Image (cartoon, rainbow, N blue to C red; front, top):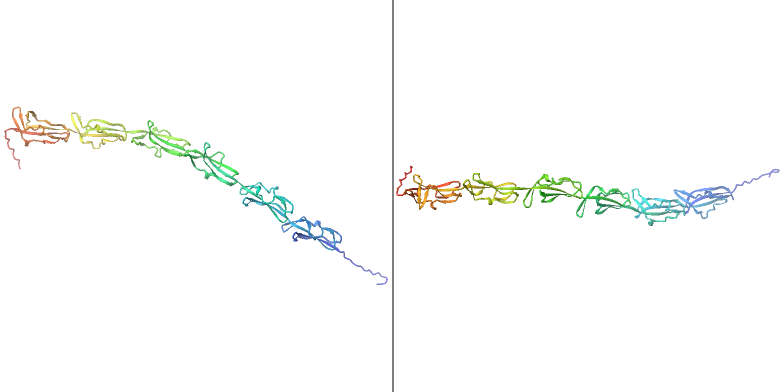
Length: 522
């Protein structure tokens, strides 16, 4: 101590202070955010309040955390109080946010629309309702155009509820696909059904393409009647291609009855001479027909009875060429005239000369009618005093037969006749003087006819019918005796056509010895 001085001793003090630090952890104690210095170096007993460092939510690593209702961790210092020496730790506890996700599936569980987030990072225990924020559409149309309709009763999960911390609540809306059918009808032009409906598309997705052309037959037959698709094909309002729509799409094809073309064959009086021919059976309306180019127009027709008819082109009835008419039978009638023939009989001699007028055996007779000219075949004909006999052959070479069938035109049957032949007997002396006298009480003179106008080939015999007397007595009483060996000509033989055969018997006076004939010179 120094006298008279004041010695000062100064004690230096440092203020005792306190800190307040705020921690942030999840319900499992994991740190989810950096600590915050709420109070640094504060005087003891100073008031602190950490509520300004108490965020409602924290996001870490893309995870959202919400302050729990209790807020402070068990054992944590209170969020407000007096600062105390050292470090006061206040720990807030957070829980993970909750999610609410909506799924959209069909009845088989296939996803038909991407999931929708109804609640993203929602505060636990907060209310959610997936039905009131467009999360529950009545219909869904996929990018492909398919349409689905909600099946309310099939919803999975709770549409309303509380967000659950750290969990994803799932609500699944189930949809049934809305489909459409396409049905094809078949009717005639009067609206009558001509065939059963065809299901072209059954239960198809909406907006799918349909095409009924594969159920579009060109023709339909019902109860023996054939129908063809009309040129327009579709009934007004029908579409054979398009998009399937909800419900039933009806496509109606319209058909018209087929047409017929029938050919009749008649004679000029309208009598049928041949059964009808069908040129076109069940033809497509408006298609071409031509009855003249398919064997339907014969130039000639021969009936079962053999009659022959020839076409009269100018008499044809109806149109040979044209268009088939729906539901109608067009008729074409070909008219024919009967082709007839004549049969005449001619009479000629062997030189071709006519010896009698022609005779008609058949006049305008139907062809193939049987004829027989034998009733015109005379055994003999006399012309200009000359008798003609039918030859054994009877018919002229090249003549038609006397029996046959009538043919077109004139059939000529020519009978050939030959002149009759005669045989005369002459009587003369050896010097050629004709003898006239009697024999056996009968007159005798040269030129007597043994055979008159006889048929050629007829036998004659001048010796057996009194034509050969052994003696002739003249008017002067001279008696001539037959010289058998001197007979000229043939006593027997055949009559020759057109000739007069002569047989000459030679006589000498009885009891007169004839002079010997000179011997022929060697």
